[in-house]
Image (cartoon, rainbow, N blue to C red; front, top):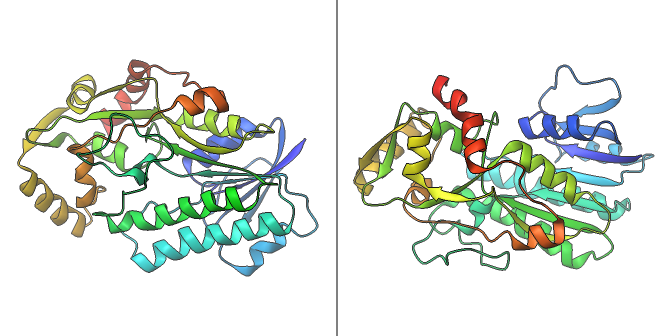
Amino acid sequence: MSTVLVTGIAGTLGRLLVHRLREDHRIVGVDRREVPGLRRNIRFYAMDIRRNRCESIFRGREIDAIVHLNILHDFTQDQHELHSFNVVGSQRLLDYAARYGVRKVVFLSTANVYGARADNPQYLKEEAPLLGGESYSEMRSLISADMLVSTFFWRMPDVETVVLRPTHIVGTVRNGPMAYLSLKTTPVAMGFDPMIQVIHENDVVEAIVAALRPGVRGLFNIAGSSAAPLCTLLRYLGKRPLPLPYPLLVKLAQRAWGTGRAHMPAAEIDFLRYPCLVDVSRASQELGFEPSMTLSETLESIRSLVATA
């Protein structure tokens, strides 16, 4: 039975992952948020991964693998806090992994690091440049953290490092895509209907489990079974698209974001205009990951969630 350290255990994905792993692994959880209702056989530390005392978790205990989920996607935070938590926190964990002989590091990034662009190829491979921060400064800390772990992959060949870049995650997880889909009237960019890839949170957990297998290392795009036009997704979910000119859409998003009434920063509006589709052939061939849910099953599973939000 190996010992897996899960950061961000208080989040939806953290709780789902722990439930999935707890029968076959010893779990050590870290989060600065409290986690009520954890099972007794899960060792939990309420602390910030940037603090020096986080190293005490590794002293006197053999940690076999780290699953790093504790990344801030809350772009209401200022740039300094985003960079400190996402980049400095990730660097601390990598330092501990190297110092204490951790054999596996799995980092959950996001496919949004590629950016939604008019000149994107039909499908982006893992070697594509990470351009999501060009017009979206809040994304830069996520890109920096992704590049930090990717560099660790090459610098520390004795550590099996895995970077997962999932597309828009849907389910019970509280994030930008679910907040957008939960709007009663969903604004779209007039004249645009980009292809969208979504993936259910349960399939993301299964991708992480696959990444924990011995011998697996590398960078992997993760997506659901198929892509569909944005307006098709909205119609399936019973949403009424509201086409707006792009400049007006940006202004409304900026105003709503500034007053705290929106969960989508104005710069993310580009994902309502341009595609950001990823090639998942490497995940299929090397990771052995295939999503268990079809697109219709994924959308059906969240229909009631977005209808009642």
